[in-house]
Length: 186
Figure 1: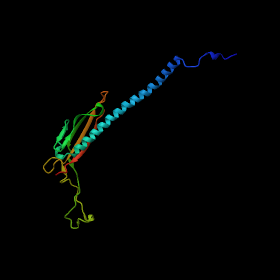
Figure 2: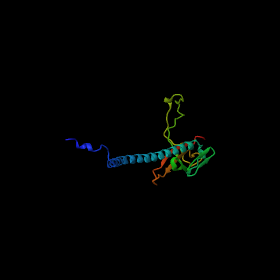
Figure 3: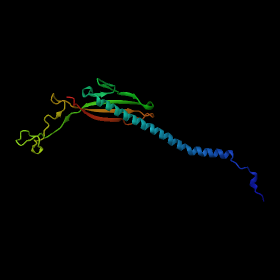
Figure 4: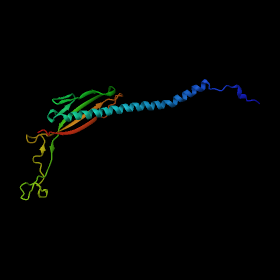
């Protein structure tokens, strides 16, 4: 008996090709979805990084301004000072993202306590710390709360906030940066 399969041609039918193509498409779709989701998350992370850079840059420029050129209050528009301008309000970022930068400046009352050295003690020698006798703790001359000419506010708190809205209209928590600046110019 001769081989009965000889009469059949070897090859792939159109049905087999279509079935293989459908199987490959079904297998590749989840992979494409993962790449798409990864791209969206990367863009979201880049917007957050842009907001961090804006906050950091704004704070660095703000700290370069002299103490008396930064007013107390909440500022949502550019701060124009004699020494420079701090961009506030809406700022265009990378990829058509719009960021809102705001600045709040508050007086920061400071009180500290210390133990003065008794300079009237007979054994006191400025060069020998072992002879120093400390008096009771005091805040005399160490209160800067703005309550009088001799008690001015000497420190301000700077708070910068950068917010934005994601393309899906969700507003993530803002980036906030805070610092204190002392008036060392007097």
